[in-house]
Image (cartoon, rainbow, N blue to C red):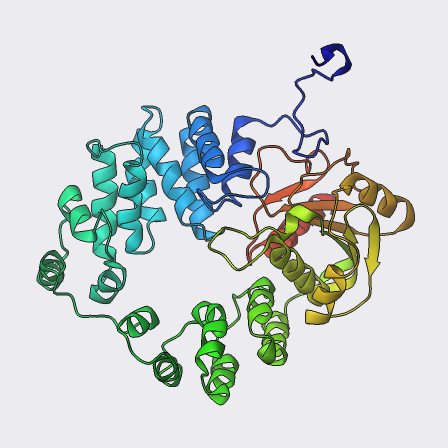
Length: 442
């Protein structure tokens, strides 16, 4: 039998690796659980069901308007799809939050398939009548989508778009929309010309991809995500390179290019050129910026079981971005030790970070302490899943922790500015925050 008097039976929160973590308010716990969350997808230390359960438990503990604002932020700024729907579902379960359900649901539903996905989430514990506020929100969102959008997302499954139309009693804006909705009910919507439809129709894959490329039917993300499929289908390389050169990448973060290059390495040169071009011309971050990248074992886990991207893609991609836009920059990796990474750019920087040391422990505290002693910096940006083994000291200058996971406990608090999740708005957030701080000083 274990000798319990030898164990630390304190109830202070800890990361999964044992470092002291901040005992957060319900609002901050909810934010960190939501903003980097791919709902119901397992992560390295926690499974998706546990994360979803924690979100549901926290919603009634947080003021209704703050939950509603978080749902909108998660959808509009962090581009998450399922977590905002779960937040609204949980709001509908509590009398204190119900009055904001309709307006929040209308705002977070931004794709036609999210109409049916919300009802599926609402019924995940069994079918019950939709609340009046839920019906009102669905009815307000439904008219937003045209025939192409409805046809594109009118997929098979236990809950179809026509079911949501009947359940919500949505009203068409005009006779033309009423006609489209009749087609939806009878299954007669015009078949959309999308890459999914083209390939599922049994067409030759090479011919389908080449036609879609020639007709410019692929958006930037669809193009990047399908480079491996095009390579395997033997698509004409000239068409692929032309599409890459013409695509609009202004809002595509570097980690998307890094993930694409892993599976289509023969087009890495073009991908790197587009990636660097997409971040060129951005205003510089003043002063000296140090980027500290977590390369521990848990960071190599995929973002989800369906995703080909790893947490390291997000971390390395942000390091590449900061290297390009910082006035002066240095990049370090940390795991069991801290290592300075050679001053490279683009994919070479990714390779240097990844090969800098074995992917093992998470000694973030040791890394920050070492930088505080040996380096001058105006800004320290830590990119991590926060599951540190050791206590993390305060930064010597401005300190940011970008959390690329959604685990319950983390370390980036106190004098740190803590950011859950990653998006193209992260750097703009730095600029706005520092501009405001400078205004206070001046």
